[in-house]
Image (cartoon, rainbow, N blue to C red; front, side, top):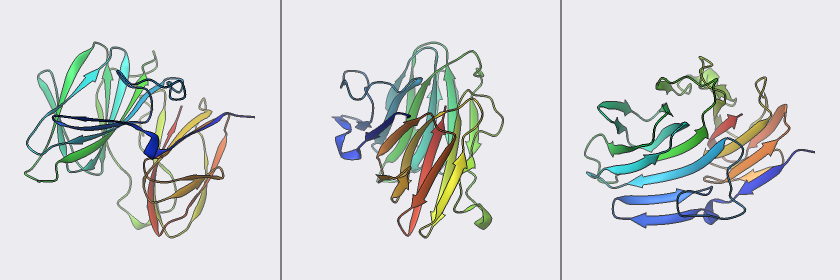
Length: 228
């Protein structure tokens, strides 16, 4: 029997600071709970809210891989003398070999500021050292109501899948070889994943899986699955 852990959105740790807001699903920096320790090599799951015309500084630990997905407005990420533009509908994967701060700000003069989702993995010897940016495979009608892989080039020891659902639809997804753990995270709408109800911001960890069964319960929904 595999392990199952639920993480409720309303139970995330929330930190309000001068330049924004941070909601943490797992332990992060000064926040610790015995029920929210790292899930294997998945170390952090954070939702960041930035203020318009201000920069957010995010710490980056050595030998990790940071995934950033904009949720509201496009952002620019500055890492040393390099900068990367990441728009809505895109995702960036940043391998980090040495600890350093990352500065992030929004592109454009939108008063509502910006929001992005951050996932951080422990790096392995199978992960590339190069930064990779991906477009989310959501643009065509025939791609609806199923889970689609994002990392198409097999550069990392984990895989991300995203699914856009229209109507109350069911689907099954076979996990990749060498992956038997799954973290599910709705980005919009509500879902039932392996008979567990998830809303936006909730997280679900499952282990010892080969196939995941899921259903969108809302008129439309968007969900991210991470297999590792």
